[in-house]
Image 1 (cartoon, helix red, strand yellow):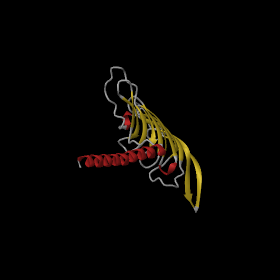
Image 2: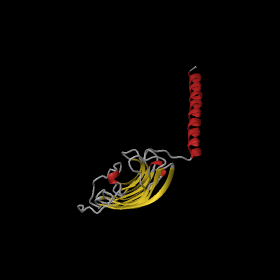
Image 3: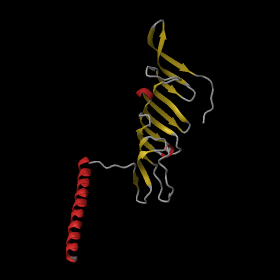
Amino acid sequence: MKRAYLILAAIAAGFLSGILGAQLVHRLEQGAQTGAIRARRFELTDERGRTIAVWGTDSQGSAVLAFSKPRGKDDQAAVDLDDPRNQRASMGVRPWGSPWIGFMGSDAQPRLEISLRQYEKPLLVLGDQSGGRVSLGIDEGDAPGPATDDWSLTFHPEYRAAIGMVKLHGKGQKRLTGFWSINNEPMKFH
């Protein structure tokens, strides 16, 4: 009788092992068939284990590939690449779907940004330690919409000078016209 229970237990264990093994092989085959590796975030680290690049989402919800500034051998401080101010170079897609590429100065001020703005119209912004200095592209104004068709080359801050074209409405017609503007008022220079 004892021997019969032993044989029965061995058969049951073999049967369960076969089922579990088949399930494991099936799941592994499914993963191999999809060819996908899924993760919420990928981090690239240097030889000291410090994060130097991130592929994931940042604190603003943007899908981003971001790189930190180079650090010296003695610099142990972690760089939080979830904070856009720490992203020396980055590219990605904003939460609302607009793609961008950006470069930051060592002072965390934007130096170059290329982006598609709302309604998929392009904008290029160049800056220095004081912020944006020159922009080229769509001029969204106060109430942007899909029909916005105002374009300019603008020198900042405070619209110091600009040249471009705007859409005018009047007498039942829509037309584009050119413009130029210069603000001669003195301003503080940093």
